Image (cartoon, rainbow, N blue to C red; front, side, top):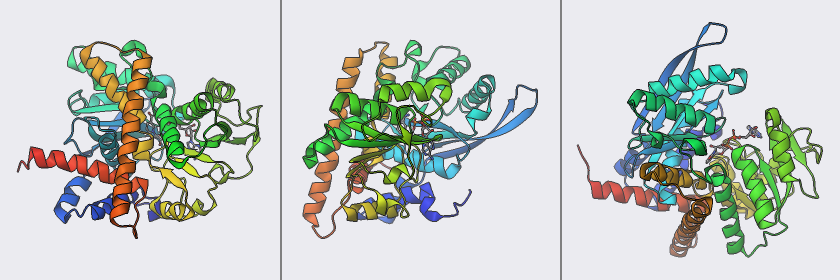
Length: 428
Ligand code: NAD
C-alpha cells in the first residue's frame, strides 16, 4: 500500500481518525472498533486492455467492501490517476457510515481504476470498464455489491457495467448498478440527486441557524455532477447567488452572480470546463478562501487542510465531495465557528436515490420525478434531524466537550451498524 507523504492528506488515516473520535464518544471497546474499522474485503485487479493501436496496456483496479451487515455493499467507481487502495478503502468506509446515516439498507463499498480517462478514446474506455466489470462479476450483484458513478464516471459507464454483468448472467439484470441512463432502468432524479441533497442540507442548516438562504453568496469547488447541480438548485430553487466556481481548468468569479445554467452549458460543451466563461473573470486566489456565505467543496478529498482552513470565509461548508476537509482543518473550522455539514450527511442524496433506483429495478415499476424528489426530501430532512439531535444530546451530556456535526453523524451511523451486528450475532 502506498504511504502518503503528508499523513494529514492520507484519506484512510483521516477516515480512521474521524471514526476513532466517534467510537471514543460511544465508549466502544477495542475489538468492536477493529471489527467496524476493517474492510470486509479488498481486491486489486490488473486489467489488460487492447488499445486502439493494438498495444496491450495494464491498468490497476480496486474494489473494497467495507461493511455489509446492513445490506449489499454500495458505492461508486472512480476513474482517476490518483486512485489507490487506501483512497478506495477510505471512500468505502465513508459509504458504510453514509448509508447508515441516510438509513438505507446498504453497506459500504467503493471501486476505482487508476487511469486518466481523458487520455483514452471512448472505445478504450469502454473496453477498460467492461474488463473491470467482468473481472468483478462474481463480487457484483444486486444482492451483494451494487456500484454507482463517482468522479469521472457517469451514466454511460454504468450502462456498460449493467450490460457486461447481464451478458455474464445470461439475463438482463439492471439492479446490479445504479446511476444508469433512464432508458436502461435509471431513476428519474438520480442525476440531480446528490446536488439536490446538498441543497436540502443547506436549506435545513440555514433554517437551524436562522440564516437567510435567499441572496446568500455561494462558492462551488468542482463543477461536475455534484457541484454543477448544487449550484443550479441553490440558485434556481433557493434564490442563492453563486458568485464563484472552479474545476480542473481554473476558477472564476462574478460578484453579481454567475448565470449558472449558461455556465453548465458552457463548461460541458466538449468537456471544456469553467475557465474562459464569458460571464465572469478569473479568480485570482483559491476558491476555498473566497468571500462567500456558503462554500460547497464538490471536487476531491483534502481540499480544506490546516494550511488554508484559517482563511475560509464561509459560514457554512456543505461537503458535496467525499473527504474534502481533513480532521486538522475540522478543528480550525470549529474554532472559527464555521458550520460544516459533513459529507456522510451532505452528499447522501446520491446514494439515497440510488437506493430508490435499485428498489424500482427490483419492482419493475418506475416512479415519476416528483415522487423520487419528495421521498428524497423526506429521507434527507430526517437524516439531518437525526444528526442534529445526536449533537444536541451529546453536547448536553458533556457541555465542556461539544461534538461537531461530523462526529455526531458518525455516532448515529455507528450505533445503527452496531445494532445490526448485535442482532445478527457473531458467526465464528
Ligand atoms: P465529476 O467527475 O462529475 O466532477 C468532478 C469535478 O471536480 C470536475 O468538475 C473536475 O474538473 C473538478 N476537479 C477535480 N479536481 C479539482 C481540483 N483540484 N480543483 C477544482 N476542481 C477540481 O464528479 P462528481 O460525481 O461530481 O463527484 C465530485 C465529488 O462528489 C467526489 O468527491 C465524489 O466522491 C463525490 N460524490 C459524488 C456523488 C455522485 O452521485 N456523483 C455522490 C456522493 C459524493
